[in-house]
Image (cartoon, rainbow, N blue to C red; front, top):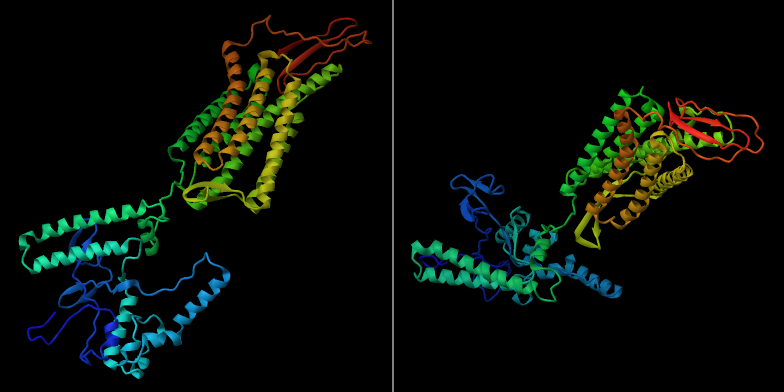
Length: 576
């Protein structure tokens, strides 16, 4: 821009101008002043896309001047600087050679020859600006013939620009050259028309908006064409964001979302039902039906179901609704609650089956036996103790942690899961599985042995059905869990179904028949006897009897076994 007397010029130029201003054929001499790129009192509001006045919030890095107020400066690092890179796809030897060259070219001695050349020798001047601390040594410029005051201005602008929080670099992404060309042409043509007076003042704003829309459409066309090419490895937008360090992967986190309420809803229902049955057991504990089935074991079943149902709540937690630490706690809480609940429920059922077999074994030998609660509590205490010990070791030594994993090595597709850590966690989980599955198999064998025994209210039949249900769900559900490990929603659904089916089937089969009999006043007299044939004892000529008090038996049986030589052994079973 020329002054009225043509004695002053203002230009925005490369840093090369400073190095060349003393060398022929330049005639500027010492009449050169250098200043940062001018700032502005206005800034673009990204929401309205309008220029608005700077304030402390919009322009946090602006400089306040007494006469004009806040001025926002954005130093422009044009052309982005030079760089040296080594391909990762070449041989190790070539990598070493290329790295050595980069180190040589950017080293202090070699780079200084090009960044600070002799001030009067234009033949050795390059476009390299200062990029090392040694390049801003005022004394070195003075030794090469540069004016100290001008050099000080130049280096001050360089340092100020590089240290500014508002520093701007040019576009560095695929198609940037084409986009810059569109921008340059559009801006140049617009300024030319204004200079020639072809655009009235009243139409300038609408004309700028029109040009902006046209450029935006051209930008989109250029980027779309690039992205659609078969050779394009990374879309233009992603490359731009990665270069700026603001790239955020559009990740599908596969969160549980509303599906978590499926498990939570059934968890609430199961807890309410289990508590209701426990209350009924307490209220009717003196009734012959409840007393014969042993209130202790009925309450244990309810407690076990409550624990299992409660495990549905931490099971439905992921990092979409909780922190990392909370997810870690949820991983361990799920295992604790389910294992304790399963053990209580399963051990109570096992104890009832085991007691029945002890009674039958004693009866077949014509022995009198009294089987009390404490005689069948050891299986419960043993299983519970083993589970608690294994869970404690797992929790204290190598607990599960919540992690995010990529599916099929795709960083855009992730899922959350409880990670099994080292060997301790693997060993403890394996032992938990072996102990509980082995106990389940053993219990079903015990249940199979009582398949032909008929008791009042058919309790043994319902217990057997419950055991079979648990076995079926375990042997079908566990393999399914391994198939859906990388699908959180499917895994949650399958796991929830296992817990719900096991809990609900046990409650329904154990309690509903009793409540029906209880409400109907029990069985009518004359319909309480069921007979079963046993082999006669060949040498028995007198009567032996074995009476088991129903108050002590877990299924409340009283066997009146009367055996006489060559007579049919008849067993009538009655609830007390």
